[in-house]
Length: 274
Image: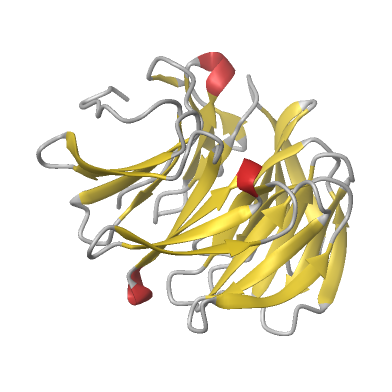
């Protein structure tokens, strides 16, 4: 529960991704529209790509099998593809309004782009490096996640109260699950058919059973959670809580929040390197 290292990045790091070799960390910076390549062992940024001050990069997804990094450029209405080997910008694709979050599976050729300003999710085919489909959703989608098999896509919303479930291949809607609005983050369990939904009003973690298509429990938390991460053993969840200046820790077995991990500043993203 202690901070052991701090890496300097560009202005307002918004999202992070770790390569499989665990030596390279990528940090997307919202305020100056840049991407840092950080050497974890050297504990410093060794290269920076700049996309422009107006990019407001809001999320990053790493697709290791293709050696690509995908970035959502919120204010440019684009996604950018970066080759992780050469650390060069490969392509920009225009999408709908305000792409804010990305959902991907490590072995998939598809990335799903959550467009909060268009009430839709865009599908990017990485093999063809082109748009491959569009899914209409409800009001102000805020986050999405793929299940552990990459078969289903779950979409939460800031205004609409439903968690929507889609077939990730056919894009056909499979289920609608009431969770409540003000969703800030969605995460699929790494071992079980469960989905975790963070809400800001009230601050809580909603535990959804996919097989039953119902809410199992609602766990109150002490602050707004912007992003979720789960270790491989699946016993706990970590939530980046900017207003608390640290990480919220939730025990999924006991169904309650544990003591927070203080890390200073306003953490906006979290990942588990296991």
